[in-house]
Amino acid sequence: MTGPAPARNAVRGVPPVCADFEKVRARFGAAADILNTFSSWKLVEARDSMAVAMLNPELDAKTCLFGYIDFPDDMAAARGLFPGIEAAAREFGACAVDGPVNYSTGMGYKWKISGWQHGQIPPEPDNPPHMPRIAAELGWRIRQRYFSDLIALNPERYGQHLDNCLWRGYRFERFFGQQWRGALEAMFELTKASFAHVPYYAPLRRDYFRDVYLSFLSETEPVADVCLRGSEACGFILHYRNPRNPKQWVVPLVAVAENHRRRGIGSALAYCAHSAARDAGAQFCVHHHMHESSLFRNFTGRNMTIAEYAVFGRDLT
Image (cartoon, rainbow, N blue to C red; front, side):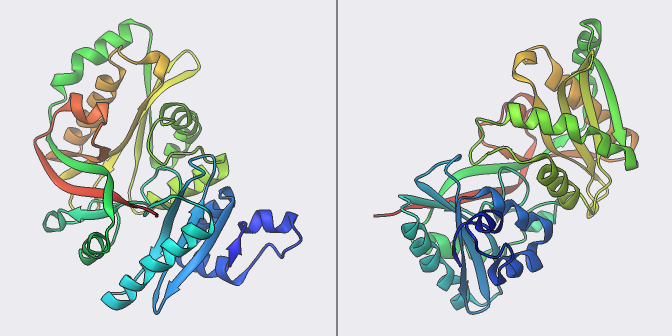
């Protein structure tokens, strides 16, 4: 199917449920509903492989994204996807195509390009090693890099920042177990404001945001620490034990409101995560999926990079 996403189809008199949308939803569940935010999309299939090419003018009217990608170990089928993705991007009038990006900035995008020997750190891309290699062979290049760094637990390093924040009138509230969903509203508002500069980021609707986070955290037991001043949420950090490696405590997401930065809130939130990890008996923190320019990644330091991820792109001529 070429054209608008299902919700927009209904406005134009086309049935809101189509066979292509159902194929994507059958594989990716509620995350497929994010296609409603794209002005145009097209399902691309090659033998047993599939992907979706998407255009979202709010992100970039001239860059087509691809995502919702599913492929077997069949190299020929995987290679067959890329010409179809490029052809769809040209149909949309795009000058470039980047991916994989499933929805906004979240955990359902990127390809893993190194670190398989260190095991899995959910959530992360489940691509086999040959997919980035095929993309490179076909002339695709890395657009953005992301890292997962193994950090020695050292809550004392950040303890003074917590004390300073408390002295300034900030407070910290922890959400865990079934209560962690209570932090979703603060997370929604803070990510919308804090991540506007992040590559490929576009704000999600509240219901999409909730469904996406509940989905990608489904196999973890997340803890959210939220920094507040009065009733205003000023920052948060999300963290949990790696269900595949109990020695690791994973930090996949940190955000601080722009008007509250440079006050030690990020460091105070790091204290919250590192102290929770130590109390739970973990040995290391993994600062997960951090962009190469991430301020949090740079000020917390790095012991060892254990996984690397990338978004690939190709300029169209």
